[in-house]
Length: 196
Image 1 (cartoon, helix red, strand yellow):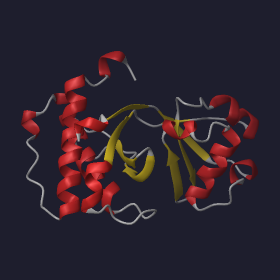
Image 2: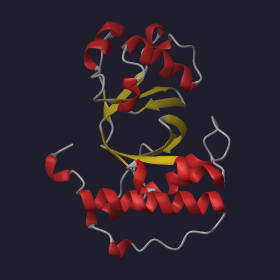
Image 3: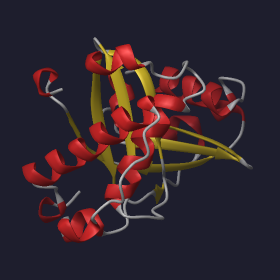
Image 4: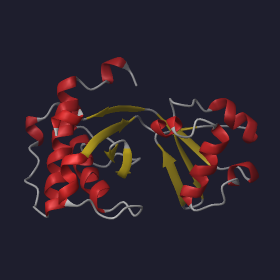
C-alpha cells in the first residue's frame, strides 16, 4: 500500500467507531442510523474492501469481509462488523453480555492481484508470509486468509492446506491441481482494550 494511500489515525478511529456502533446496535437488534458520508473524508467515502475481525481475549469470535469493492469503505466496515457478530457460521451470534469483552480489528484491503506460478514449489517462493493475504479459487469455490493468519500458520504448506479446507476442498488440493491464486495486502488496526 502506497504511503500516501494509508489511512490517517483519525480515519482509523472513525472506522473503529463506525464498527463499534454497528456491532452494538446489531447485537442489540437496534436499527442503524443512516451513515453521514459527507461528514467523512474522501478516502472513507470511496469504494473500498475490508474485513472486520472480532476477538475476545485474543481468541477469534467472528470475521467477515469482502474482496471486491462495491460500496464506500465506511459502509463496508459497518456491514461487516454486524455480519462478523451475527453471521459467521463458525460461531453462535454474539450475545449482549459479550459486547464489553470484544475487541474489533479492521483490515482494509488493497486490490487483488493475480499470482502467476508454475507448480507448488514456485507458489511457495512467490508467497510472502506475514505480508500477503491469499485467495484461492477452484471453479466457483474460493476462500481467503488475511495476512494475519500467517502468525498462526507460518508454514506455507500448512497455510495452503488450511486454506483449501476452508474452501471446502481436500487440504492438499493445491499440490494436485493448478488453482487460481490472488494476493493482496492489508492495513490493519484495532481498538485498544481500554477504548471499549
